[in-house]
Amino acid sequence: MNNLQALAQRLMTLDDKITACMRCGMCKAVCPMFGASGEEADVARGKLALINNLAHMLLDDPQALAEKLGRCLLCSSCQASCPPGVEIMPIFREARELVYNYLGLSPVKKIIFGVLLANPGLFNFSMRLGAPAQGLLFKKNDDVQKTVCAPMFNFFLGDRHIRPLAKKPLHAIHGHLDEPRKENGVKVAFFPGCLGDKMYVEMSEACLKALKHHDVAVFMPTKIACCGIPAICSGDVKGMLKELQANLKVYKDADFDYIVTPCASCTSTIKELWPEYAARLSPEDQRLAEDISRKTMDINVFMADVLGVKPSEPKRGAKKVTYHDPCHLVKSMGVTSEPRAVAKANPDYEFTEMKEHDRCCGCGGSFNLFHYDYSRKIGQRKRDNIVDSGAEVVATSCPACMMQLEDVLSHNGDPVKVKHTMELYAESLD
Figure 1: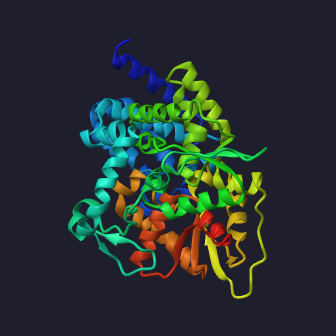
Figure 2: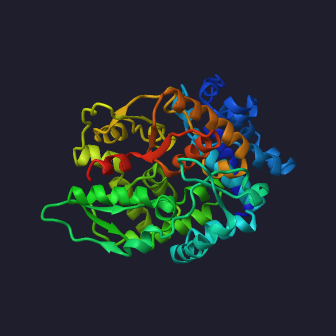
Figure 3: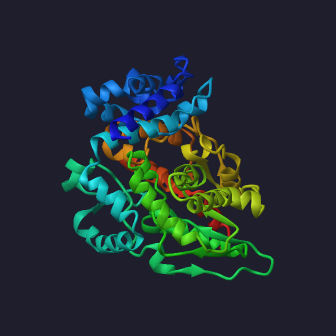
């Protein structure tokens, strides 16, 4: 079968999946992109209509189609609110794959997804080289979020306020970690994610501190690759499969009871998408991906449901903390109570709920890179709800969300600190 025939077959399959959409418009109320742009083509039913004409648009103007499909955060808000239960996210992911198979990826993306992120040794080495040069390229912002900016690169990066790379990444601090389990004890494979290894090292250290406090043995190899979500969102399935195979190789013969991760995006990718995409690999790889999926959980769920961490009564004069629900936890996996229980376990904090706590913050991974103007607009709404809550700290369970929250809070000069729920809990263990 030639490429065009294969493409035609997959397009017909997509058409069959779209028929359940009633065009009711319920997705309008929850779509962060539609809330920012007001354009019908940006809401789920608008994109489904585009996909319904995918074959014609691929031939007429494939670049315009790619642009329209890219104006989506893949936050799952529409899917979670869809009355007939249309599986919108798999449709969008497959549409992006088909479009970029037709168009081809840019050389830069091919290098990032297929080479750097799929080869942990090379990626780690390149980041270690880049960290010392930050002082020359970035300047520190006067904010409590500890962000930096790069005015000379605004043409490329936008006016972003971001965390700098850690002076020493997590894998360089601990090396290959494979602790013996305690007698009748639990052992976990800790998956810090790219941001947890190279940027939010304090967050990862807080996780390791909490695991040690509870006598949980840790397996953390140095050669962990990216989970694959950036490649998937960009339609690069080949790059994602390379990253998946690199990770399966690391975990193949390892001994652990659970894989825990402090990154909502990594958790949902490993648990939900690894088995799906591993179906394109060998039967052995598919079985391993399915086994790992069954063992994967968000670290808040592990702390609350496996280790029994429970809320405490706040002390008098405790700091106010609110919580932002990452989309990949609340909408993909229904995780809501466990992160709050972990945040409330520290009596030095008093919990307060913000309005629209589960509305997308506007990061969306690569969406933030290519549509920064809309990302900031969506993030501003989240910032307003955080500030209106009166909280001194906003906690969340995803370093990508942390990065977005730090950006919008820094731009507004807000004194609100951004922390992971595990950082709050680890503070109570001092």
